[in-house]
View 1 (cartoon, rainbow, N blue to C red):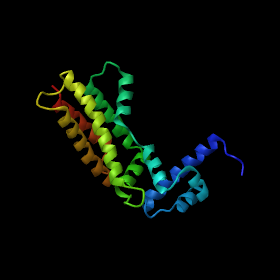
View 2 (view 1 turned 30 degrees about the vertical axis):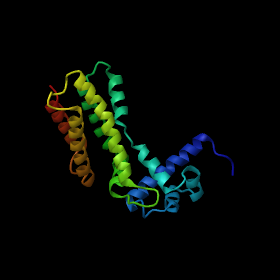
View 3 (view 1 turned 120 degrees about the horizontal axis):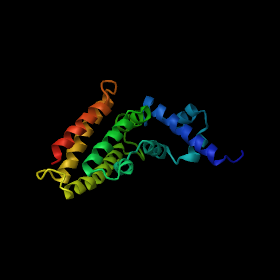
Length: 203
């Protein structure tokens, strides 16, 4: 078989990820075989193993597709306006993240992680969720500390408390929305929640 070009290899990898997203969402991760993913993509199981070591590796790559480090959201906001205050940057970064969550692919993959992925072999969904949560907490805390340094936070609200308040509120909203995503717009409802919390926390 002729060696594929980089573009062809990248297209094959994306096709496998697209197929995994659809089959994992429909059947759950544990009940899906790599053979089923390959068939759904119109490819062979060998193609799956060419790009991914195992199902855990495939699942990690799928989650990475929708991974939104808070730092990257902040950088995008700050690049658009270098004079923006830390509190306003947090508010806008959260709004941007919520807008992305409403994209169908983001919704499906995060639903797979939270509701359609069980413990097995090399996949620990709770550990993955904890890692994402801790990363978000650490990156958000840095910005709230800068807000405190600039005397933008209320004196009776520490950066740690501010970070936990925002993260907890958004986490609860996120889980409610994933259970019934058609019930409300997470961007709209979450945006109202973010704006209110930021007003409460700032001086």
